[in-house]
Length: 356
Ligand code: KG4
Ligand code: ZN
Image 1 (cartoon, rainbow, N blue to C red):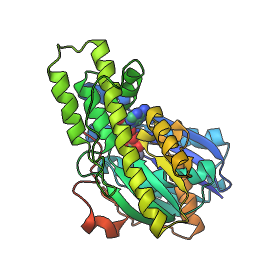
Image 2 (image 1 turned 90 degrees about the vertical axis):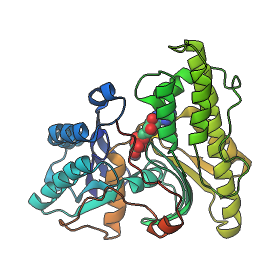
Image 3 (image 1 turned 45 degrees about the vertical axis):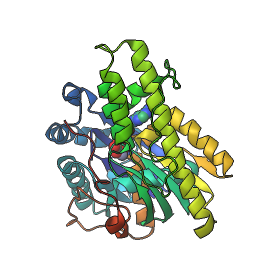
Image 4 (image 1 turned 30 degrees about the horizontal axis):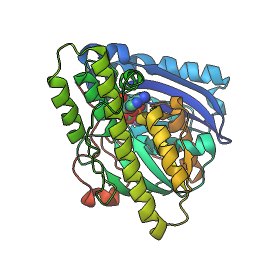
């Protein structure tokens, strides 16, 4: 089985070829950072146009690097949502066109399912597992029971953790994109310098909240001279990162405790999404898993941030189960992994990534 994956839901234009025996034959990602940098966030219209400009070339490049032709494909997968609608339309239309011309199955993949199943591509993780999905638009704990079978255990009541990293970085005057530059600044900082709140610590359940933490950083930053001296930037970044990591760990611990009763067969924690590339968060989760005799799986950084290999792989998982889509599939700007949880969900969990 060989599947072409296409990802265009935010600000990365990506194409990849992946095989059923878990080989990534090619994985091409074009970041639009330069286009969006002047605005300090992703501008949907600019993103959609950039996807359109580059997608054909990237698909050709992915095919060439993999050394295959369209006749070798078993299917074509594209992110069908959630995400910025203009970009999703570009990817879906490209995939549908290739599928129609070459008479191949088309697979509309939920972007979150792409992140959720990456650990099966990289580490062959078996179902069920606990998933911490942390990106710019999402912050959720899910029980992953199978392809298309997700139970939401908790999500954010305000900002996604990646969004909090991005906004805090902006507040500290760190360069765009915020998450990685905050992590870099924190390397030089003292995480114990500021005693920041640990959001939700001690509260039952698995929901998240990051706006209070962000506000606490703002109050400290506002009392300091501008532009912030490098030392202050670094100490605030390190203190913020430590508080965010502690909060994530606390929420995961609650999920593990709850699952010990209801689903004792769950013994693996998987972390996915852009924020999963953060080394402090990975280290904190490694420690938590050691305490609870859980295995910890964090895909390589390149496969945590948005990419098309995860879309191709989710396509393979769906194709195996016969879960193909018609060419009448309509892109979905919102698409929760656990639709049953919507009614019990706190507000605004499926918000698209911060836009300018
Ligand atoms: O999964 P992703 O690439 O795109 C979305 O689907 O949102 O995640 C992007 C998010 C951004 O908020 C970015 O700042 C954050 O992940 N991020 C990080 C790091 N690298 C990316 N946050 C903290 N530390 C990082 N090293
Ligand atoms: Zn993502």
